[in-house]
Image 1 (tube, one colour):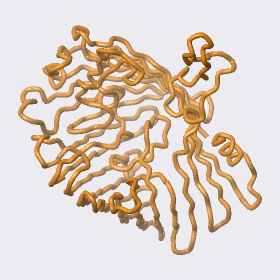
Image 2: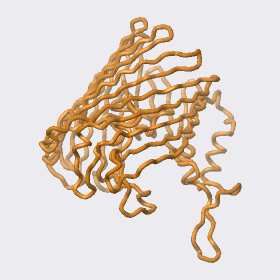
Image 3: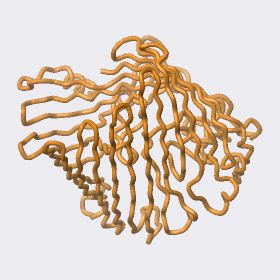
Image 4: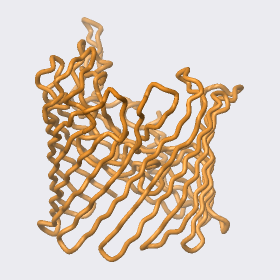
Length: 442
């Protein structure tokens, strides 16, 4: 029923709508890795892993009048492995569900369509007033990232009331968010209030985001300050974002009197000259000397801020589970030291690209990283390692592109000298990755 209602809503022609604007993409991505375990000697090393997944993201906007608009985002088959959502039938003999991979196979509604965002907007001479479940975006995206690109895996969303206004190049934004905790008669909801302001033109911009978060029941109070700026001078573009988080209180895990002081920053410079271009990015995500004390210093970039194919993208080391079942998918991440997101790291990421043909571009990238800070147990094993990647992108027609990437990650001592109490060690072998992405954007 939900699929039918959503389909009718998207295809119907509203009687009073002046315009419907469609944005979105379909993206299919195939990955092969050998091996995310970083080992061929560990008894739980999984060897080669591969899979293909897709995502169809639709973002319609109904421009009802010059003063009112509705916006939404629907994801069809989001991050679903190919063949994962075939229909089930019941075996008449055993009574067990059996997948039907034939022409009658259909996906269940819960798997095939996800309502991600929906919000309304009022446009007035005094600014834009919005309310609902909407994307969060700021600066270079290391703190808030909407995740609306085909390469993104997730996106930041808030249920909020927001006001924004721009006068010439000066902008201001104020918002209030709420995270419902499940009890209407208890003051346990997480609340956030944000205020941002700055200046932006086609060639330069800067801004300051201030966000205050509190939860009465946990006595949690936290302030986040984010400074961002960019400048474009001819073919050269530079961008900077720096974030500080300060707070304290109790956690729902039962830990009390926790204090937080964490920092993260990145600076990116890029240049394009005829067929040749280059980019270099340097970033710092703060770490913690003692992760078991009551002082939190670790900073994690938004997971959509990607710099590599393997490092800070795929959990490593990923091992085969001792007992494979439907819930673990045959894998365990109990030994994983890094995952999806730059955290506790100092990294450097230069790249160079060259337009081989008007619609073909080759790109060579290097990523190297080390711990920002670490406990005494990591002494002598601070290096994450180095990743080298080569990609080719082909844009045969407008709105359509295909990209193939190959990468090798050489693990540093942070992995190679690591020994897990239950799952052993031997995490010193290179990881190889390959990825092919095909996208239709509109």
